[in-house]
Image (cartoon, rainbow, N blue to C red; front, side, top):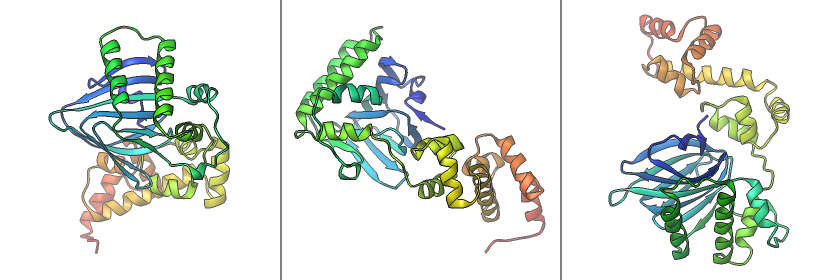
Length: 294
């Protein structure tokens, strides 16, 4: 699974300003577009776009277009596809990744009325705010080329961001949204897994992404499908692979990735166990039989 922000730490286009574990402030700068980049957010994030354009699409097909100067709060647990498009030469963004502990520390200083999850938006979008731009520039000026990496400093900077947003937004709007992020959330298991079974996710990943413990996920899954998650995923992915082999010629490596297998050898073994032939043998037999799919 492609975990964000973990995947970003070693990328040449990303500068770590402050970091402690997966709580961090990162600066991203690109000159070439990045299209259809998939990822799963393991931490909440505020994405502040400094230059360029960003298009985010969720697994539920919600699309959000972010333009220079705008900011977007995105909750942890989102599997998304992103396009990053430079404008006037480059794409630049500042990313604040934080966890529930930091959110609760801020919320302890505010008063939040009792709120129902469904009464709050899934995302929190902010228009162009000069004070946010100044905060971003100060962070870049101070920490882009220094070796200061202390956890206490990182904590204070993210709390500073929270207090600024709390002041900018209508009373309690930001605090209520932040409170929403810390609430436990269950997603519709059947909808999520049927839309995402071809992604390279393990059973543990599906459990986490649907807001369940592994044991609860297995129990809920069996209630829906009268099968174990491992068996259902294997059969569903191999059924998809067979359908693709009947539709078009495709390399075995590409086929494995298309149906959710990172390991090609494991895919070949699973395919042969179910079908009796390897994917290549099956494809050759189909060609030899002169079969055409209509």
